[in-house]
Image (cartoon, rainbow, N blue to C red; front, side, top):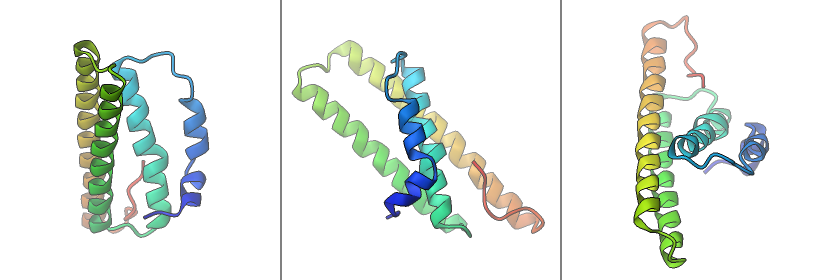
Length: 131
């Protein structure tokens, strides 16, 4: 688990301020905000905690992100169900958002893995993937 101050050092407050009052609630915009947090301050905090990040460290990060996304998505759906707000239309929008987030995470994880492969093949490259 990462220390809370690492999230602040990685820009958590600035990110949260930037999404505090979203006007665009479309699946695309919502997925963009979710991915922005994961690829931005959350990955940044992980990098601060693991300055010599290895592929194994990144595997742990990937698992934690996917588990956290699953928990958050499930919790949101449960809350909406409990409030009797999860109708077919909203469920469809949530499904679209989930699809976009998963696609974005797949791309991010693949790109970051490629950076590890490049660093391993060419020691003149930094071993630490960038965001």
